[in-house]
Length: 199
Image (tube, rainbow, N blue to C red; front, top):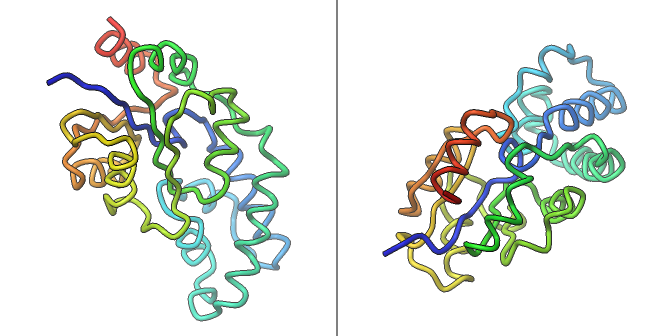
């Protein structure tokens, strides 16, 4: 049985958003009076949810749910304001060709901005399903990948999942889907992926 669908993580795979995430987080920390060195922000993994990153950078937030919520709301605003900082990866350019051969879905730890990123990259129309973490456990929990499969009416063996970090791999494997680790900005890895899936 062949592969019918490709499910993509967004950040690090289709979108090069490292600069945008770091920029927004630094601005947020300054606005709310937290003195966090830029290098510490740059060292945070984008694999983690925004909430867990904020708590890691400013531990007092763990016990302050009200402040955490205010900061997350402001971070959403900054994300939208600075969406121009999000760049397409090399792999994003291959989405139209992939969509001609496979059904496409996305599964992102982002919340409401997941769809917006795809729109900014100009590839939103190619995605049949976009799962975000609004009301769904974040990866490495496999729920959003299972839900994407369910919405497409596919079995795990009919799809592959492409992510760029360990949490993604754990989520894909937990959902029983072949999981491929791929940095969408790595020329050699993207070329190998294109060769396998587009020939």
